[in-house]
Amino acid sequence: MVFKKMLSAFGVGGPSVDTVLTNPNTRPGLTLDGQVNLVGGDAEAAIEQVVIGLVTRVEVEGHDTEYAGTMEFHRMVVSGPLQLAPKQQLSIPFELPVPWETPITDVYGQRLHGMTMGLRTELAIARAVDKSDLDQVAVHPLPVHERILEAFQRLGFRFKHADLERGHIRGVQQTLPFYQEIEFFASPQYASTIREVELTFVTSQRGVEVILECDKRGGFLSAGHDAFGRFQVSHTDVDRVDWAQVVDGWLRETTSRYGSLRSQYGASHGHGHSRGHGMGGMVAGAALGIAGGMVAGEMIEDAFEGDFGDFGGEE
Image (cartoon, rainbow, N blue to C red; front, top):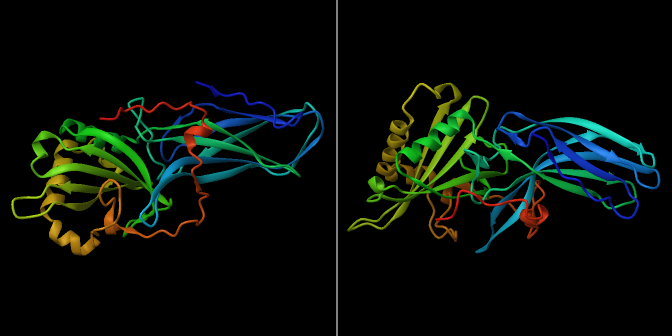
């Protein structure tokens, strides 16, 4: 499948760029292959560099505020300085490694509601403003992710929403400046103890660290609160276990040991999160404006010019 979007020329008579992905579907740890096709304009152009980068929408919590911005989290230079003659056609092939921690955007061919992902191509032209283009990308789960998501479904959990939160989870080896939260409504069999569950995967070449945040219901004499659990799985476990049984065990362990985890993670209160406490005290505060290129208000959907439909449906 070739995903192709023709772009209008940059400015009047300037060079134009058309990035063609061999396949816009990929998985964490794999690659995105394609080529950047340049066409010269009316005059010779000095191109300083051609860069591609993966961009997505990330939620940022500030002082009592929350906003979404576009973040580029992985980039690669595909060409250094070059001269592009008038009307010259030039094709530059590329193979972009997809980081292991790249968030999942699509499950069973459906876009997860709340997720966006794109490949941005930037053409830096001497004495001109950088020009860029955005192509839609779909990141599918690895087998171990798939089994865990299937297990939640088999246990009766209903998918609610997914998003990316800026920051780091304390005690977890993260390479990206954000983490994904996949939210579920609790199934009837857990409804007496859990309202919702947020699932986070932090993936590496070796395996996946699974972080669960359960929004626990209050009892007759106790208030509701968030309970956290962390579990390690290997990619080789995929076909070795009954995942519904494993996930059920995780949920029971997480909700029954809140006391010890509270001191371990310092589950915070008053975090000012619009959906509860987010990851609470597990998230080490991330200073805004560090590397990553956040642009508040530059909504990625606008950049995609309506190419995105949100699938997965809101409940």
